[in-house]
Image (cartoon, rainbow, N blue to C red; front, side, top):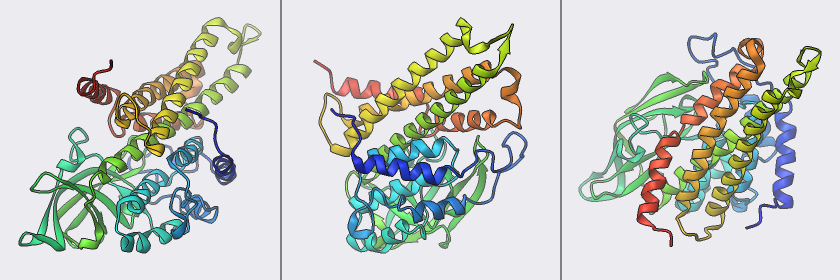
Length: 382
């Protein structure tokens, strides 16, 4: 494999850095000092800037106004967004749009994707199920509206918890299971009759929602019942979460290097002390492991290249490293910053809260270790 990024991918990174350069990680109240959500809405100014820079359509087909790049490009942009704690549904909206473009009917893609590229349509995904521990597709049932034909529409019942940015979204991608055991994907308008959003607050202070569906009617054209659509979307979301962990970890380690290089004890910068240097070096090794496993997973789902395990194995390895690695990085950063790291006027505690949210999103390391074990049992390595 070749992890050299293409000219188009590098150009996308430069465009993203220009957009995110004006974003301050402490632009909203501290989650440590706010009893509820830190803000009622996403960062609309930033969302508009991403659209104006053509970054929302980076991975969508050119026929809908996109640039036609692959999931690796999306991960590169997500990596930059995490360095400033960008409060936008970049991962969720792009992943759902990519899934519509890949698996949805052409009419649905033509209706939604051009608007998504222009930033007029915000998309999100319900990927946590009812509790966060059971498969998301088991939390909602989908049945044909009448009789045994789904031609006229579907009816959804169930609950999805911790749906990111749901209050700001125009469509929520909801996985559901049918009576015959298939998984379908519904593009649900949160304003539709039977949909109830109950506010929840994430570890990093952002608004989530419990989405309750009570006999919600979804037209046939709003359903994606192609085999593999939900698995593809879940793979994109998980891999993108690993990219967020990498970008956040890189920024935190850079903050730590800057602080320990200036903070002096006994007349010397604490960065020159062996105990400090060794801890920082260990976290740098974590970052490199997080990086290589991320690009391995993104490369597998981008190219469809075969291997001893399905791509789900590489995704599980990447999420194990992302979850464990980002936790160790922020813990070490807090330790090396001393009391200054807990100062709510300094942004490190915000990164710590975001890191905890990312660590647990779409399953902690233990859940992916179990999934990897199942894959190894099903695909013995010779």
